[in-house]
Image 1 (cartoon, one colour):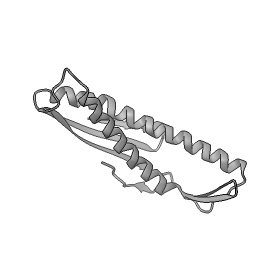
Image 2: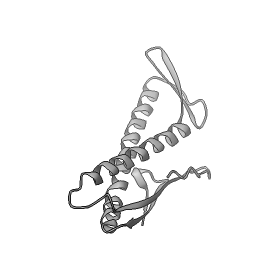
Image 3: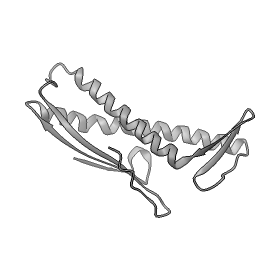
Length: 142
């Protein structure tokens, strides 16, 4: 199991996971998933944060405005788009989790020293974000 606070370089985010191996090599597979899955997911989140910083910079440089606490309007080249930061964050988390799990599946299939046909692991993971305003993002993403 793993509990990783400040996950993805975000102070208000926690990653939790339980990895239960099964089959002759289940313990090896569970350990590899424990080692690699959080790192892969964390790198997705950190790259998202870099994009968010770019959006903030664009917003500052183009005199765009906050339309509410969760909505930002960004204009460029005469086009305008309103971003819902909360919905975009949830969608980004979902996409990142799916990509990390797919990466893990491919990575395990490439292992020649471990039989992944008769062995594997159950991985139950969660990303929880606690907001400063007291809102708890109970979007437990698995």
